[in-house]
Amino acid sequence: MNSINFKRHRRLRSSGTMRDLVRETTLTVDDLIYPLFVHEGKEIKKEVPSMPGVYQLSLDYLDEEIEIIKLLNIKAILLFGIPQYKDQHATSAYDENGIVQQAIKKIKSIDKNLLVITDTCICHYQSEGHCGIPQNGKILNDFSLEIHAKVALSQVKAGADVVAPSSMMDGFVSVIRNTLDENGYHDIPIMSYGVKYASSFYGPFRDAANSSPQFGDRRTYQMDPANRLEAFREAKADIEEGADFLIIKPGISYLDILRDMRNTFPVPLIAYQVSGEYSMIKAAAEKEWINEQEVVLESMLSMKRAGADMMVTYYAKDIATWLSRHDHDNKRK
Ligand code: PBG
Image (cartoon, rainbow, N blue to C red; front, side):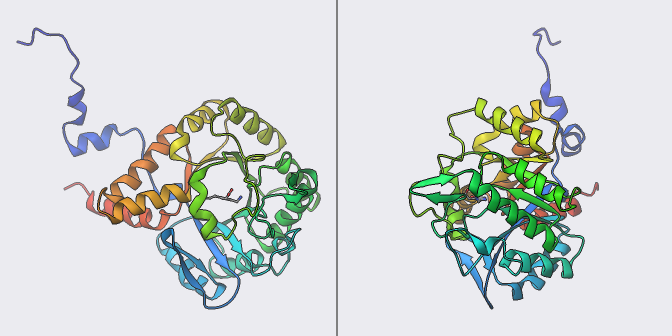
């Protein structure tokens, strides 16, 4: 007889089938958004040194890449352009023949059902690598908004399904919403990077997108990692201004914020597993210090558990492959 009174939690973990049955959070390929870097020029397939497995591709490599994405059943991509020409006012970001605009048309011609989300920012196009237009060492807010509106409009005109403004200028959602509406694009949603911290985890991305700031840093527009309440203010304003989705970024170090946003705002939430998170896992896996697949899946699951509806991840293609193998192996015997 058991005279001590305690709970037997292990009953619900007793076998694989039991664990499958009581699992609270699951991951599917529908949760994934794959970032893609498209480089102006020809015959470019350049691996990002700090992000093994991530490439800058020129348009001629897109057929192959989009076919793979389709085969893996990934539903959405987040598109970044790397132009050959940069200037003070980031004009190549809203050129109707700019790299992103061309890429959207090409991708849609290969697979019209792939959801194309565009990063609406100018740091890769602006000569000093800032997300707004600098003047005398400061980043102009309102003037930058005009440029961001032009960028968003040009992306939508080229065929983007969703725009994802990421500059963190005040009012960026409002200006973009108005511009899209005035031009008849009421149905195009805005996925705002509304809760974006000034994070050192973005280091490798700046390699990938050639977008390091030439002076100063991004701390006058991105959020202070020490702050939590600020996330509520930013998110609330963005949703009032018309954001349809909210991105929380980075992922793994900001799960508390993700949970806060989940508990407060009834909009779809996206966690962005950023470049530094990817590179850290890659590097440790290359040294065989951790199991890459298990660590990646666990971090994805943790973001969903914290409240994300979907994740942007450079691991999307790997995850899609692992999940389909898992589904196959997981058939009940
Ligand atoms: C553009 C942008 C950045 C990232 C996404 N969009 C860079 C930045 O803000 O410096 C970072 C993505 C990553 O690190 O994976 N503003």
